[in-house]
Image 1 (cartoon, rainbow, N blue to C red):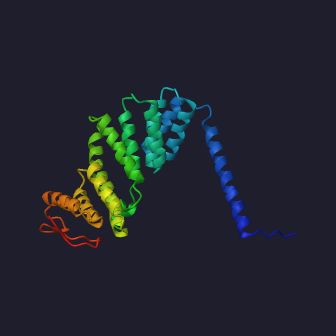
Image 2 (image 1 turned 180 degrees about the vertical axis):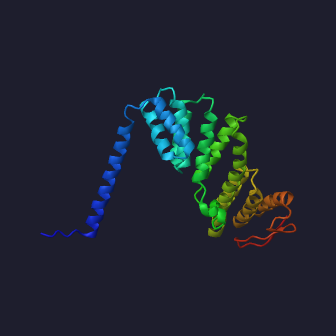
Image 3 (image 1 turned 90 degrees about the vertical axis):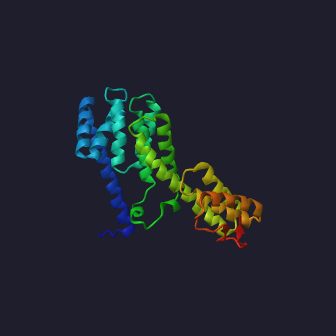
Length: 271
């Protein structure tokens, strides 16, 4: 008798075969490492790292972490796992490994490296390939990973100001601060267009209070001026305008000492 298999059924069978093959492969790899000494696993893992064979390196280093958690090479294997995950673009794995190392070995002489790599993994997770082509503005995207990177690098320089990784972290903080501030202003602009003027003012104030050294502080003042105009609080708007004029007299929203709102239907404001 001829058996006719539907396309959906065939796809299901093929997928099941792939999963079984994957499980068999994983079991085979684990069997291969049974009985292998810690030192050999570490040497093979190190050699794989140097050769750029990161999958193999992860396999060996994870075996050390699982089978010899208190062994001679356990701590170093955990550190190198962070790097191996990072090199395979497994940002979440790298961050999790770094956080675990920090929790288990807070006084380790290389714990600053774990802090740095945790921030670097979040940095990469928050970036997008199209950014380099200037086709998108990452400040308009969900800034969750970017905030993580900012917090991680901040913690690094606070805890280890003399770390060899601190200078790079400081430079990245400057960039991240500007990205996060711009993101807040994109949200504030949205609120202005929707007539949520109080929310817009609060976003502008948040930028000034939390990212005072960012390039966006002058734009944040402009947002607050327009938000106050929308709320018909012209005295507060004029006070904020005066601050904007004193700090950025050439701001694009100014015409001399006058401010013309972009989204709010209100007369021009003069300081």
